[in-house]
Length: 92
Image 1: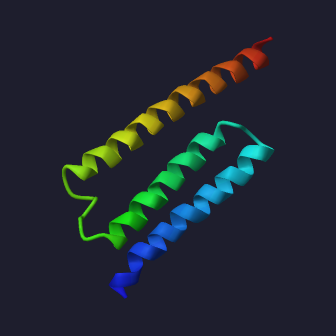
Image 2: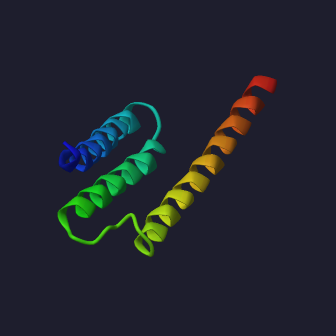
């Protein structure tokens, strides 16, 4: 069962990427960023399962974490700008 866990996890990232891509057309274009990150996570997880090298061990894990931190910072900045704009609309 443990051999399939990584593939299930990769499938979860792919499903989230597709769902965020769908929501980006309906709600906010910013969700394309999250969709891209989830697609990146899917590819990373799938490649980790298909090759012998452990991509979640150093030094490769630092690459994954670095991309995740950059996306997190972008999300925080986008959220704070959207919140500030919403508060300005309510105050006017």
